[in-house]
Length: 108
Image (tube, rainbow, N blue to C red; front, side):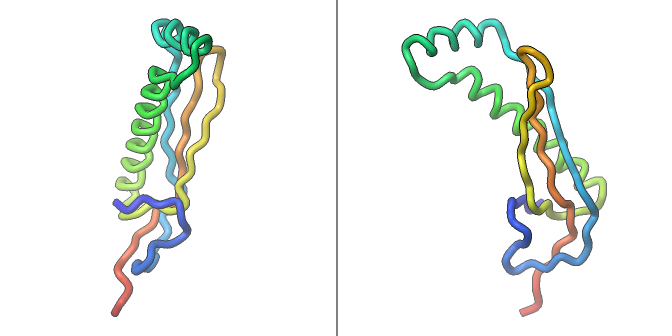
């Protein structure tokens, strides 16, 4: 599966547009991560617990989007974008979306 944030893939031709595909996950903060983050707020530095939380959320949302694209028979997803939104205090949604397409190599 080719996944890009551009409108086309060099050397490939779009032969069919399958439609919008998306994936999302909602994650909540963890008390242990909040305690560590409060110390980082005092002393400075990367909030590794939150970084790991976001990495895991991106991977899960992307996996769900790609599963949807495969179910539609796509072999590529174009114009991929990520977005986040607050759901409630301490929880946020990570959302990824793009256009599922069928690609083929351009004739030489």
